[in-house]
Image 1 (cartoon, rainbow, N blue to C red):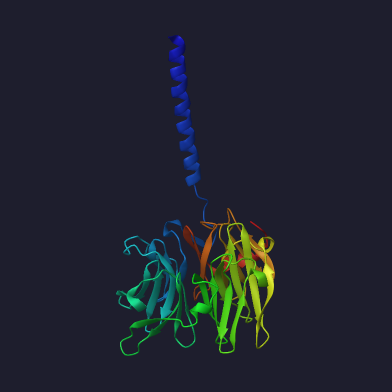
Image 2: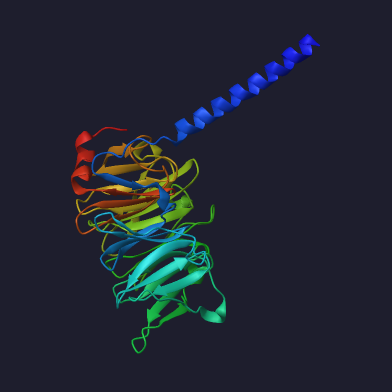
Length: 350
């Protein structure tokens, strides 16, 4: 009987200590380091897949809907699932102070007064939008899970009309995750369908295609960027494989001239690429933070403890005051200009 009672008390004591230990670890896990000087971090912003300027403010889009922030970092509207369940994946400003919103179930237009209207698709079927890109003619290229569409504005009533792009069948696959209209009049697409995905370029001179067989680090293309020197970068990967590829034009044709692997980036899969006004190129990874390259050299890598709310870096935006906004899978960051400069002065890997 005594042994039974002792065993019972031992079990009660063991479970009580275990609960105390779990509670203590949870409390420690919830403790967050203070933001670095010059940084503002909003963990409650949730995922930020895209962000841009709208009506003098910064607007974000993610799985929680839309968020709106003043240029100085004041929250005007926090992201919320109240936005009719929108899971926003892409944002693109339009003429007339309007905003095109691509989400998992279609396309919306936000008007200056705040009214939001759906865009009608050809055939009435809606598609999941993955990317939006304006070109110099005013058209917007719409990449979806089912190919490419072109959005144009009717000047008579400012309505947005969508048409399926006639050359979409020439892409590697219909899953278009990235699009880019370059300064030379060409348009680029990245498809996310390993092993069949890749990069495609179209212009009035013809088209070109690249796959892993012709040098791409991975067939899942996540992002495209044209830098100030006229190069085009493509980010790619899946989990522990991937990298970035750079293309140059000789005046007629484009060539893949350089690739970056995990040893020159924060991690193997590149999720986003951005060039700031200084000419620094930022590479966001899927699960390893970000890397800053200056003059073709990786100068800084930000990982754990750097101030990032999450190590999956999904979007960038530089405001008029040169503050840098960074969207992650779980939180938004605003870094003031002096703090951005300090990153390079440290020249260390955090």
